[in-house]
Every structure is written in C-alpha cells, then in structure tokens.
Image (cartoon, rainbow, N blue to C red):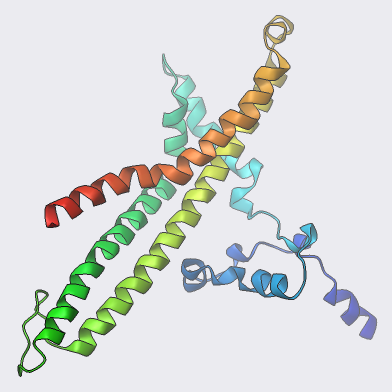
Length: 234
C-alpha cells in the first residue's frame, strides 16, 4: 500500500536494531557499518532519532549481569578489588584491544624499514637484481608492501581505538549503575553520612576517569615499548 510505503520511509533509527548486531566481520573491522549514518549526516543535520539504540550486549542490563557475576565472587574475598572484577568482566575485549594496538604499532614500525628498502632499490636501479635491507628486489613488491602495511596499520589502530572506547563506555556504565544501586541499598544512618556531592562526583568525575582510562590506557602501555624498539633500531 502506498501509505505503508510512506510510513516505512519515516521509521526512526532509534526504533531499529544496532547495525553491529548484523554486520559482518569486514564491516566491523573497517567501520563500514557507520557509512549510512555518515552519508545521511552529509545530506542533512542529524537528529537524536537518527542514532540507533545500543546493541543488546552494551545495554546497562546486560553489562550489569556480566559485572555482577564477577563482583559477587570478588565480594566473597577478604579484600574485594573493583579493578579485578572489571578486568574479568571485559577480559576478552581488553586482550583483543591490546593485541590490535600491538599489531598497529608493529606495522607502523615496519613502514620506515620498507621506505628504506625502496630508497635502496632506487639507488641501485642500474643493477639487474637490486639488494635491499628487506631482501626484496621488486620495486612493485616493496610499493605494495608499503601500501598494505599503511592500510592495515590504520585499520587496526582505528578498530582498536573504537574497541577501547566501547570498553570505557561500558565500564563507565558499570560504575554509574553500581553507585546508583548502592545508594538505594544504603541504610538511613549511612545515607546521613553521604552527601549528594559525593554521589555526583562518583557518577560524573570518577566514572569519566574510567572511560578516559580505557581510552588512553592502551597508548600508555604500547607507546613506551614502541619508543624502546625505535631506540634499539636506531
């Protein structure tokens, strides 16, 4: 029916599922699932209704259930540690993001070596079989290797940063959710000792530190190692 077709054209993005729930591996790796939103933003200003809802695994309820399992086990110990519970909740995501950052850094370190080999190839253009530091005597091969390394380093770096931001947002949600539930469970005497400023600080400033910690924490681990490797290679 024509009226149904018109109505279908005005379905809000917030009423649909998140693209990540149906995207393939290539779309996730290259962030191609965001292309429709980028194209729409290029044509007209975006509105809140243009943004998809959270993926099911990123909702507060799903994250709460994941964290509660590890936090309950942590509370059974003499000295519960919040960081350990968060680590166990996002262990696979953290390891994946760290590995991607390491791969991206390694590819970045590889590119100067490839450029050096290209320069050596150009300097020995008169020789039948030019000798390069990488052992590759084909100029096209070196150019293709440089392009591939550059593309892969950018792709892995972007996806690692996206994954780190996702982990940070989920950790922030856990922190805000835990503070909210704790304030509801406090007794009257305990609430009298807790000011509204303390609650606001924990749900805003402290939770934001959790987000930024995951966002920049991987750089704090990978960059010093990369610097040491550069100094050794020099």
